[in-house]
Structures are given as C-alpha cells and as structure tokens.
Amino acid sequence: MSDNDQKVFGRQEVIALDDKEVTLVLVKNPVGLDQVLEMIKTDDQEFSLATLLNANYADGVDTSWIWDARFEELPFAKIPAFMTGGERYRDITFRMKVAGVPTEKLIIKEDLKEAVAQLKNMPTKHIYVLATYTAVLQLRKLLAEQGYIQGGMD
Image 1 (spheres, rainbow, N blue to C red):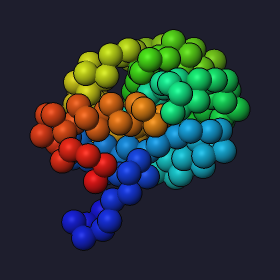
Image 2: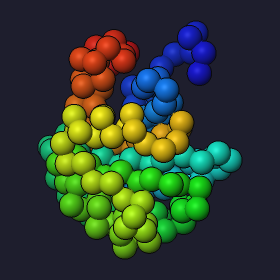
Image 3: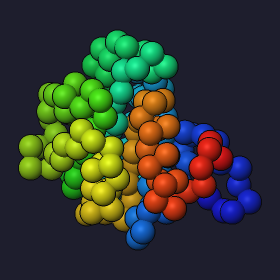
Image 4: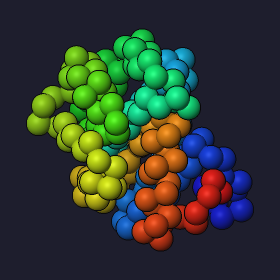
C-alpha cells in the first residue's frame, strides 16, 4: 500500500512493526472470516497468523461463529506460527487446535500487550492479524502508544 492509498479502518490495514509487515483485518462473522481466510490462502510467501477474539457488546457476545469458518483449509505448511489472543483466547485457541494447528506452532497470548510483543518476534516478515472489532481498537491503541501508528482510526 503506498502512502497515497486511503487506509480503511480494519480493512487490510498494513502496519510496519519494526521489521515486520502486519496486515490487520477486522473479522466479525463467519462469511467475512471465510473471505479473509480465502484471501490469505493465496499468499505465496510464508506468513504467520494471529487471531484476536473478544466478545464485548460491540463484537457480539456469542463467539460460536468461529466454528463456521473453515480454518481447516489453511495452508498449514506455509504458516510456521499461529498466535491466539484476546479476551476469548481460550475459545479461539481451542478452535485452532480442532482445525489442526500443531501445538508446537501455537502461541497463546491472552494479554494484548504481550501479543504486540509477540508479533515483533514472529518467525516471518509478514503477519496477518484477524481481530474482532474491540480487539482491533485495543490493538491499534497499543500500537499508537508505541509510536507505530497515529492515534484514532486513520
């Protein structure tokens, strides 16, 4: 994305995080999540995948929709590390395990500050972060506080 491209909040926003390139994508239902999973499956480079799941009122308190998404179809061989986090990290971690993510590739970070630190240490240059609405807001706030992005929703 060039400097002239308009960034749209939570819609494949690309953030430089030290030497990493983080693509932040808002997910809020199984149809949208499956579209994102289809898109990232086409990436011809190795990448890491983080999923941050909250269940606040703005997100929708029912997280059962994660079971309708086709995580099983991810190209596991191209993804050396998976991170789960957010307030409902247990739910998304269990979902990833059921999808077939090998335990040795799974990193669990409940606290988003720890998740940001872990993003900086992921084994690939490119990282996809799929996050629910309030997780996106919390993550962007932390990144703004650390100087990686400007505050607000730009």
